[in-house]
Length: 171
Image (cartoon, rainbow, N blue to C red; front, side, top):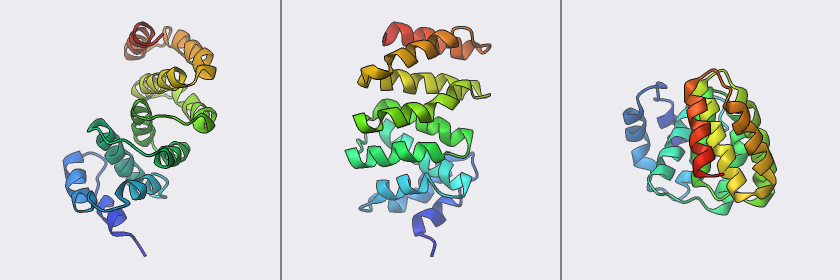
């Protein structure tokens, strides 16, 4: 049986986030709403993943704080992301998370392929996510520094700019 929230997310066309917000609005007050969205980040339908991950990202930007268990689940779901948009939403969410030590290595492993993705926007945001991971977990500082150094030579100006911005702001 398909959940009502998943059914609502199936209406997402991959472009119109206002429609997505409206479709999810009836469920936003439900107990377990965020847990259900996190679970849908691993859905077999890539557009459902995108919709769920975008709603999570938007909620975090609006000030929502995830519990430790929710954070761990979301970080685990990041590796299942099928589209670059879902991967991007994952990277954009990381700066809002307090990453448990037990999930730090897995998070770094999830971010690693995004650093060399063909999409410059994803490369730039994965740098941000890795830098925030390194801020919270010293063991990942060396990897973040190396990624930033590599990004200074990226062919995309946006990635180089992000590397400069992160170097002055974080390291």
